[in-house]
Picture 1 (tube, rainbow, N blue to C red):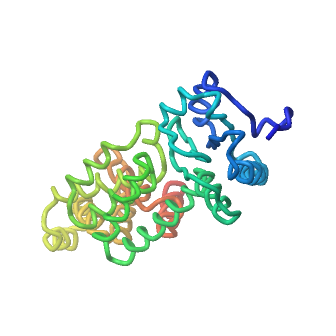
Picture 2 (tube, helix red, strand yellow):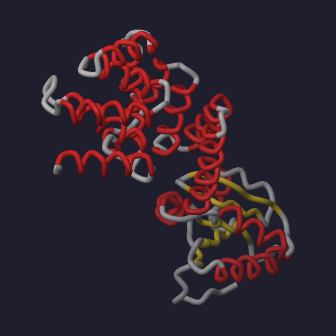
Length: 297
């Protein structure tokens, strides 16, 4: 049962070292605790098998061995009733464990479970986000909202899911709930592109709710193309109803006719729509090019 003294992945400890070598150390990576005794037959086969699996994990996990005969107080505190007993600690508390001898397959599965790192978790969340975004884009905002909510339940600061949930509520016409989600966004993430796009969507929806009837606004613009307020309100209404291409065209026309009208309101509203579309949007890129060409014409 002697261990290589130079091996920092596996070592014998006593109850006085438990706090540092298990509780605190498990906040950095998982720690396997093997409770054994020299007279325990199954311990003699399980111990080396565990050690080999820990070595194979390549630093994703460490292991400590505790002789129950020499550390009876700790064994009693942790209610060790039989040996071998194995616990895995993570973030300062037990996360998994087993009793009795285990075969190679069971040991390997145990190691896999406890060494599943945050990168693996993030891959799963990314896949869930992609699925939810597809639901939203496919016209299923209710399903998307449920999925984004589940992701936030796993990771409350998931920016992609928070932005997606805001967009889902907007698609459902639930503007107040979208605002509630915005309040959950960490301050440090306020400038994230996905968040700024969602915020722009919320502000456009709020502004759109205050405009007149679309048909009336269209009639007013047709009757007087220089009715800048009517054109601006029409663009705002169209943007709120997701006809952003038409909204962009009207705002570009307004900017072309009078770029200084209402302290440059056309350009400000246009930029908000482009932000809502996001930097990868072909429509947004096209709109920015048109705006640039007008500015430098």
